[in-house]
Image (tube, rainbow, N blue to C red; front, side, top):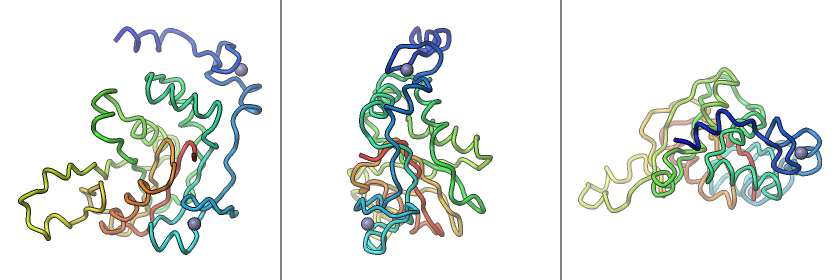
Length: 217
Ligand SMILES: [Zn+2]
Ligand SMILES: [Zn+2]
């Protein structure tokens, strides 16, 4: 509570040089935030669009990803501050720097839910906060679509029920028939998680799934 209050009153300061005002000042952002070049987010092969290459698409069903930064240095520090220190300034800063949406017609914005334990510990989901701000900034609809599956809970359910809209660790609890889903996450590492999400969203009827992330590891 006190921490939240301090976050509101205390001005941000640059995480790199300490200058007051914003959590990374303009001077430092140019030199310490490494822009991520467009690539297939699954195999890292560079391209010009961020589209998933045909091989990786066959496995993941993710159409592509737009990523702001490489997961190094200051980007890593900002994400840590947002994720583990509830640094709202860092969250706002990163949300404002997410790449523009590639698709807006019939598109909704959602997020990759973090696993239950870390969410319970922190009391908030940073990917959801990012997605909500991103949707608002781009005049798009935000919808919470995915939940993590607790596999132990499925014992005793019929097989068909168990398989319905469940893929790996995720379940989609709304219909997204014909929609493009813009899926926001903080960090993409191997792409396996976002690939699982894409598959379950496709099962739920999504026309296409495109990821938007702060950084790629
Ligand atoms: Zn600075
Ligand atoms: Zn690929």
